[in-house]
Each structure stands twice: as structure tokens, then as C-alpha cells.
Length: 316
Image (cartoon, rainbow, N blue to C red; front, side, top):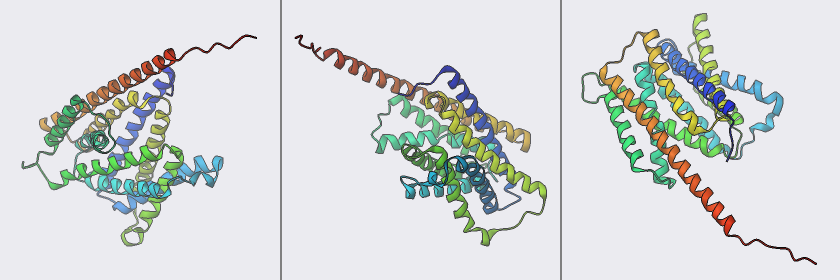
């Protein structure tokens, strides 16, 4: 098992928190730009800049050989999945408040838990199942189907949760064989090329310089956030860093209030709190379960070592 130092863990936590600031800024810019430019322009600018920045960081040192992937077709599928997720997010943010949008997106780890229990044979304790149901109830408090405040667009974040879960599962599987930084570059190339195919049909040049600046910041926030996340997970255990992912909900709600003057009502705040608390408790239970499993495996290993007979070499 990989060991992490205490100073490295602190650095990892700081990197992840700053990454959450970048992602909250990314969503804020997306919501602001959604009424000004089309999805195609926003996505193309974001991923073209991601490809350019990441390429300048990686290619001079490692060359084009870094793009040779063990599973190229799955990498392409991963790139297309993030494009679909980004398109859903960009359209949804035009109508859904930032805090509520981000809170529902935090259901993604729970969906991954469901997948792991059903298809990967992971043992999920009854406590985690209870928290999973609690998270879904929290999402219902935010969405509130059947009320006058409900609109079908509120269901789009749920679809985004499914596509984001698929992206993260692909990332987890592929990162065992390929370098995460190289994967980030490969994803940017796939996303840019796929959106470029739509550009001739939906391209409408922004006329103001400020719009181009905001589009540039969109790409920078996306690239920087993912890069800091990669660095953070290289310095600390995922179980230690996972709770700090929920800082994005706080940053998003704060940004929604400061930039768009949106104040969530009581039920929305209640649902957001339920989702975050259930997510944090679920992460704690998973870490405890993994720690107990590691302790049992270590105890078995020590028992086997003690049970082995000691061979004494004959003396001549």
C-alpha cells in the first residue's frame, strides 16, 4: 500500500480545495455564458484550451509517444462521455441555480456505489444503503417533483449524475494502465475533435472582447481544476481527500448568491445539507470498512508468516 507523508497529505487537501474553487468558478462562468454563446462555442473553447495547455506541459518533455494508450477505444469513449456530461451541465445551468445543481451532482459517488455493489461484487454495509436512500431523499427535496416550483429541467442534473458516474468509472479503470496526465491530454483531443464536427453548423462568433475573455477563463478553470485534482490525489489517500470534494457545494452556493443573487429556499437548503451529510458519512463508513479489511488481511499475513517452519541450515 502506498504511503503518504503528513506534509504531502496537507498539500493534497489544499490542492483539492483549490480545485473545488476552480470547478465552482467553471460552473459560474458556464451559467453566465449560457445566455450569451452556444453550447458548441463554449465546449470547443474549453477543450481546445485544455488540449493546448496540457499539450504544452506534457509534449515537450515526453513527446507524442505519450498518446499511445493501452485501451484507445475506451479512452475515446471516455472523451465522448465527458463531452456529453459537459453539454448537459452547460444547458442545465442556464435554468438551475448553482448550489442546487452542484448538490445533486454530489450523488455521483452513491451511483458508483450502486454499480460497484451490483456488478463489481463490492460488499456494501446496511449503513451505506441507508445513507444512499437518504441522499436520494435529499435530491427529491431539491427537485420537488409535483410542486409549482418543479420544471422538467430539474431532472437533467440526475441524468448528469449518471454520465458523470460513467466517466469516473472509466477513469478508474483506465488509470490502472495509462498515465492520468496523458489521459487528460487525450481526453482534450477527443473532446475538441468531436465538438469541431458540430462547429460549422452551430458556430456564431462572439462579438465582444469580454465574452472571449470569459471563454478563455472557462478553459483555464477547467484545465487547472483537473490538473490540481490529479496533483492532490498523488499526494494523499483518496479516502482522506474525498470529504473535501463537498466544499464545491459551499463555493457554488456562495457564488450563486454573490454573482446571481440567488438565495435557496428552506427545502433546497435542507436537501443540499442532507446530500452532503449522507455523502460524508458514506465516505467515512467506506473508509472504516476498507481499514478493517486491510487489518484483517495484515493479520492473516502475519499469522501465515508465524506458521511457516523455520528452516535451519545443516552445519558441516
